[in-house]
Length: 392
Image (tube, rainbow, N blue to C red):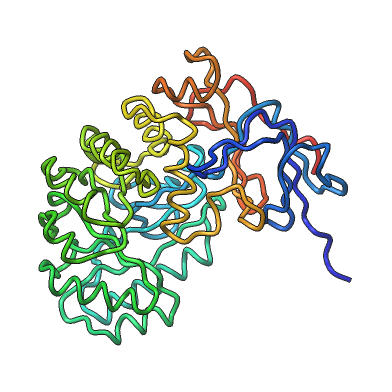
């Protein structure tokens, strides 16, 4: 006889955010997940909620897909030597983030730059985050930095070993567009997605990556288009928005004015689906546990985007750009959720209006693969209402 299926029922939901720009709000008050996957959603009276192994009473709060940080720099486990900080990933979970994408493990002291060493490090990084998920958070890592001397076989070797990402193009010794384009092409051939550094230098050894190099390289994601830290001139940002068809990644550790410019340009182009969010931490700016929530609130408030759409930048948009199985409320997707409510005493008639005014919501619970991973956030302002596990 097989094991009993693990069935999660979340009932009494006040609002369901889908992660989809085309339909950001869904009808319903209940979500059902079986063995870590979304099985159904809608109104409780129409769903099969029998034999649940875990029941969460949402008490009227908002449910959204777990937030995705499209740009982080992990090293080993839940530790960052850049800021000598432990448990930064767990702290970010308390900001509603359930998935992270590495843009390169560049802060490892003594990071190898020879081809054999960088391949070994990429494979090891991919393995240790596959085998160890800090506080349940999904960290997609093993993102090698391009170095001179790499050949096509190196990319095949890494892909065969499970590597699926390139670290930021431009952080290594490959500085010219022609060489970078060739290597990005090799990576794409073997199913490895690429991100390119954009803007001024961020760490010793990096350099300016301007619009011309970004266009020539043709990477899959325009990393921190608003700078990490220093942004490109306005005309170059607009040029990239107009002439690329790739992800426009806006980060917390960048230029806020350039972030709004990118958002406004994407809207004028009717291409808001390209906007994705990251923190670009840990970095010199530190660790940002609430960085993704802050970007959602900032872009909604200063970019005049309805909050329900701004949340899509941090969920469904990123999931689609990054080919992830989470980030959307759809049957069969990973049951990764964040439950939030309006912060106590925050202005606004409800949570969405409060976020649109620039305020952070209070996180009351995170769920990853159908398992409750955290309760009331220790980092966000306290929510007006909190979800509760009532069975299981």
